[in-house]
Length: 330
Image (cartoon, rainbow, N blue to C red; front, side, top):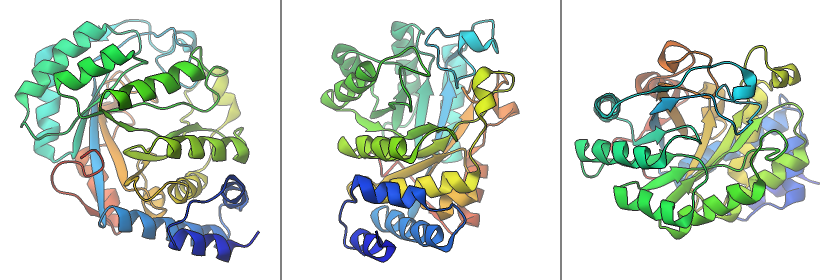
């Protein structure tokens, strides 16, 4: 297979085949060919987003031990990281959301654990929506939902959702591939735009797995796709598998961008880093409250980035950050 041919195909706006994606993922992360792939991904990302990166911001309504059994998640009851349940009230939620709005976040995400009361989630979200500017982009990050509940999210005022079919779903989690996919289709049928990601990537995931997941995310024309590495939660069974490097993550981010149609404007990575931005990531997240990759109850005291720090990383990577509401979700 010829790299020049693949890059020319990308430059012509054509979709890459599964075999071509695997070929790009097979390249050594620090070889010159991979840097050429990253450069092309950066070019494409800037082309489709008018040269503007975005910083989205997320806060968590609650923190609680969860029975979904996701081995990579600090909320998972089986990992024993958190033993108590904590919930913020409407006033705290409004405070977080307004602060993100003032800070210039292009979209505000409200997250809950999968077993959190959906009725309570809607209640708090409605109050948050009323407190924000009418045009502010509001996104939900919740567990699997029926079409009826997806419509209710839309009616409360959400513009979209974040939802992903995770790598080795049903093996490293107690959830099913079918349920995750159905939720994505329900959200889209309800008129919500869906952002997604190839995640959480670990060293055990084959290039064939990654290529198949890239192709799946491309198949439903998301607001954004991208890639994120698994953050090892200390003293958990899955942490023994290790972590991929930021450079390897940047390579996967680049290949994911080249695996998307041009209609997909966003290409995310997490956690924010200059390597990811150089490789074509044009979306980062700031976070407060609970975080499934953190062992701190408040991720702003741990791994969480701020809107300001995300802006700085983008600027250090020669990206201009969008001012205003998300282009990817609108």
